[in-house]
Length: 131
Image (cartoon, rainbow, N blue to C red; front, side):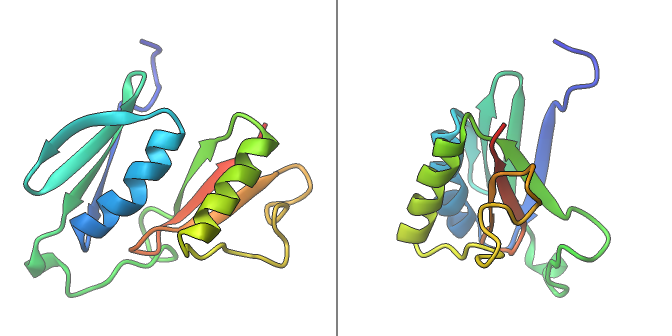
C-alpha cells in the first residue's frame, strides 16, 4: 500500500437504485468490481481503493446537492486511451446520459485534456480523462 493514496470515497445519494444503475456499468467498464452490497448501499473496488454509494436518509434530503456548493465538485477517472474516452462517450450517449460541454467535447478541459464530462443522477460531475 502506498502512503497517501485514497482508501475509499463515500457518497450519499438521493436514489440508491438510480445510482447503482448509473455507476455500476461505468465503474465495471473501468475495471472496478462489486465489493460490498447491503440494503442501503453498494461499493465497487479497484486495487486497494473503493467507492461507496449510500442512500441518504429522508430527513437529510431537504437540501438538494449542487456541485457548486461547499463539498464534492466532481470525480475524475483515468482512461486508458483516447479510444476509451470515445467508446465511453458513445455508450453514455446510447444510455441517454447528458454529455456536458458538447460544443467543446472532447477538449472541454483544454487542449491537454482529452476527456468526456457527464453527470450522475444527482448531478455530480464525472470525468473520464485520457493520458
